Amino acid sequence: MSASGTPFARRTQSVPVTIVTDHEAMAGLGGRDTAFVRLDPPLHEHPDGEACIACESQGNVRVLLFELQEKLRLGMVPDFARVVVDATSVTDVQAVADALVPGKLPAAGLRDHAVARNFHLDAIRPA
Image (tube, rainbow, N blue to C red; front, side):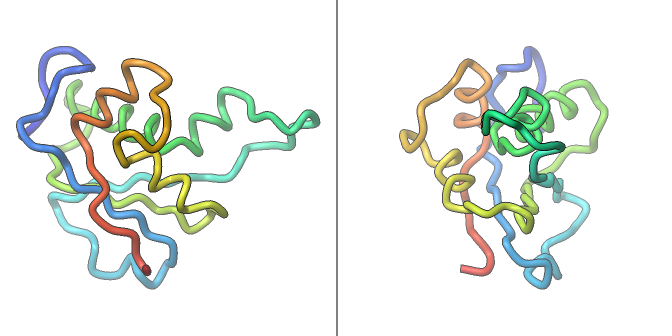
């Protein structure tokens, strides 16, 4: 099930992603076949209200999932069959979910298309 080839290669199966909005909901979601990613709030204040590249990437689920897939390809993380996204510090969880539903948000580049091919929204907990 692991990725191989280029950073934009397709996995043999799409990986289910569970978004967790509450720390208590994290219980029981782990396992050796589970990868965890965490969405964090901005690193610092932005006077103009626009996020810098560093803040944008740490709060963008597509960026985090693409980076996870790339780490797998490079052998930096063990293979995984599912992903849990810790979104407990995110105020707009629906925007995170929308980033994983094909056609909800426009793709910003090949990275977003690779994520759409390799990952899919499974659940939001609690919901």
